[in-house]
Length: 114
Length: 116
Image (cartoon, rainbow over all chains, first blue to last red; front, side, top):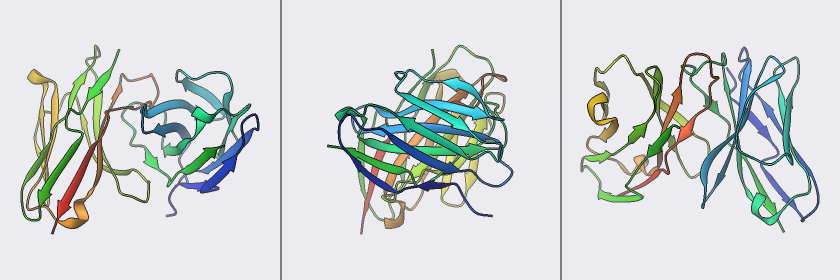
């Protein structure tokens, strides 16, 4: 079974631009969550999608948004990029949207904002 | 609010030494789940173990063992006879409740370096 796939692996953008990151979950998984990892703030939860609906949202500004498609694939969008958005963005998938579900992570997209 | 604390930022050991990574958590829920993940330099978080709040039995998997103690809100991870390949950042994480989704709260991580 293929794991969680995130594309692209690396991105370089400039301030003010917007970016879209993609995540393909493990086959059969219906929940996709996104996390931001930075040296200063560590791993922080962005949002979770289940059956195309946002289930949970972390404490991030509205510039961060996401969506999920009917095939469970998910995209995350960041508009008006700031230098502080430079981070490793990790996507995780799980069978369901319950706390007990194990989340399996992709290799991440490393975003650099110049 | 939930919180996970990994007080050890970095640990350095020599191969074959045993090493314990500490994890302390805070939660108001009676139902919760604890996880450990490993993050090698490639960046991907690799799942190691899940524990629910009703099961305090310790677990051993090869060289890995976990000690869950609700009385001290701790979920510590021990690697026996460490190897160079164990070098990575290790994260402890918590998710709460039954219906609140699968949101994980992570600790700060412990960078483990195993020297030959």
